[in-house]
Length: 332
Length: 227
Image (cartoon, rainbow over all chains, first blue to last red; front, side, top):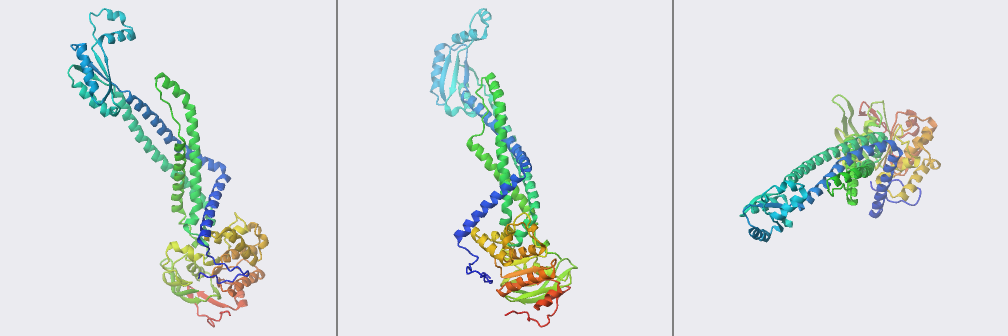
């Protein structure tokens, strides 16, 4: 069976089997040819392709934009966590010497980076200067303000838990009246970004599924359009992989286009939003800024998009290609 | 090369296309398959192509028992079987050359061999000058010859034809038959399904006749062997 039973007219009675190197070469050539051909087919129907790319681009840009926003928000909360400081108000009865002793004691703790003592007179002066209540303060007989310790946690303790722990330790010290740390809003922000993060992931999964289905449907139409070709290919001994290949490439090209559209949409909206965001951040005296995708991120987005397109094509191919069997073409 | 042993094919509960068919075709043999329409000619061809599987019995092509062949292996069997259809099954979105090249591309033949072998096949059917044309620009007979070129381009040991002369006038039919005869002379096993009795009588080859799925006894069995 392997030998050619038919003797060709020419002398070159070559066996159908070529060395593996040639086989591999022609395999790669075929891949290249199919890839180029699939891309050309997309170009030949630019409007339809553009629409698919846009749908995919929007579906991809949305979760990525939210993820970028989230990353920026997390940057903000990280910045604030770094500057979290514990304020300890001492008892009124504590003298300045005792306060200084306390300062040294707290400073010895390894969880503490720095301690600053603000004595009551300085505090009053500052308050007078910044509050504009000078006249009112003059009516007071004595300074109502206590000595205050400003404790900056060491690097390792600058987490919500670490600060919490430091808080209890300082609270337990003699002479400390009340300890305060403004972590509440930070925790709320953290909780919110956590929640938002999960919501974004859920949304991303849903939209990825939508992308797969959209590509699947588009590729299904492509399969219908090329039904005859598929039949003939199967008839002359094309393997399933051979028949599938052009459609998988089609899916990947849809993905590539969708990824690029998503990148363009992201850059455009970033540019559109950057002015107002800067102004808003300026009003809050925040160094918050919306960050775009890095080169790596952009590459990851495009690769992910191509994988999704490929997956969508694969779903369609699995569902519909196996149904096309040449049995039906040989007439009764 | 082709052997049927007690082959039956039942479609639904009531429709039986083939009943206990027995026959064998040698290498280089040319035979006709005939019978009224619905007698089971197409089913028989489909069994050889593994488009269908037999309900009972064994189909053997080139020493391979096809009954138990896994689905994955089917394409590799088809590469050894050339098929010509009445309606050609040509693709009109590509040139004659590309149509004929399909079986080679499927096999992963290197590009330079494809060119050489496609031209050899087109030369054989006398259409070398039309390789760049679209099949739509060709006449019915020419389209049929493109179909034949495609069926033989990878030099399969088996060639099947389903009503290859169905739409052609007698002169063109004779041309096509001459081609088939030439292929059988170089060792290809050729099986032609047709109900063109005149054609069969002209050539005087072995004839398998199906009647309601049953193979009629052959007059002068084996007489079709060709030296």
